[in-house]
Amino acid sequence: MNLKFVVNDYVLIWNLLFQASINEKIHKLKQKLWINYKKEYNATYRDKELMLKDPKNFIPNDDSIYNIMLETKEYEKIKKDTEKYRNQVLKIWDDNKKDAIKIIKSITKLEIKPYQVLIVNDGLDIIDTTTPKDAKVNTIILGKKVTADTSLKLLVDLVYRIIKKELQEYKTEYKEIVDAVIELAILNEFPTRITGRSHYLTGDPTLNYLKRQIYPYWLMYLGADKEEMMNFMMRDKIAFDIDKYSYEKELKKKDILGFIDFCIRNQKYIVKIHELEII
Image 1 (cartoon, helix red, strand yellow):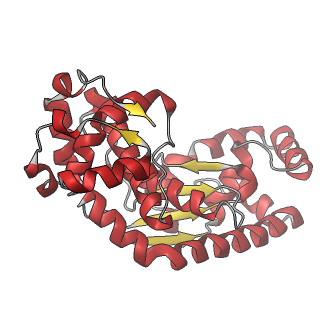
Image 2 (cartoon, rainbow, N blue to C red):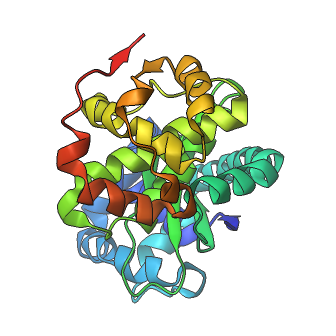
């Protein structure tokens, strides 16, 4: 997994124009632009898809709105703040990437494509993974506030969105199972290995029951033998009767897609087990 963190003027300006206003000055500037350049403002809204196909080489058909924004002192300040935010995010990634890449590879057993992370102002409070199918580069727009206490959360959220994007078209008719497995991989096992403490009781609460049903097989997928499973159960505070499960030794040889396929094929059998409980 190779991530490149970039501040792009067009992407930043577009999001300042069409996301919620980050401050009163930007709000007033947007109103002024709307009143005086309504046609151009509307035309700029349609730039997003073309922009995200190739952000580095994007040239708008009409750059009048962008040029006005570029010349304002408020944008100059926001750009500087955004560059500082980029440096924060880059440091979080650089400090963790060696372990993160190794862990993600170990858990998913997939080769993840390189991504360009387009950094926007953190006041926008967004992570946007919407990109055109024919895009020349894989992109994610990131603008989430981060502190020393939330740096891990930002890292996990970013990786989670990337893996979700990678698997967004896989077995879409079984979306709930796919989502549950991705959560087990990235929201649960990934931060557990990064921090050394369990994160298995986090994620979408509507998926908890399904995740608990899958969990014994998930441990087999991770390579835990029957003796090791007890340690995992205690670590994650999820209990099940090991003797009621046949050990699927082939699971540890599969990648995450193969594991998802296993869960889909055996879903009727998996969800019949009701003895699981949180301890």
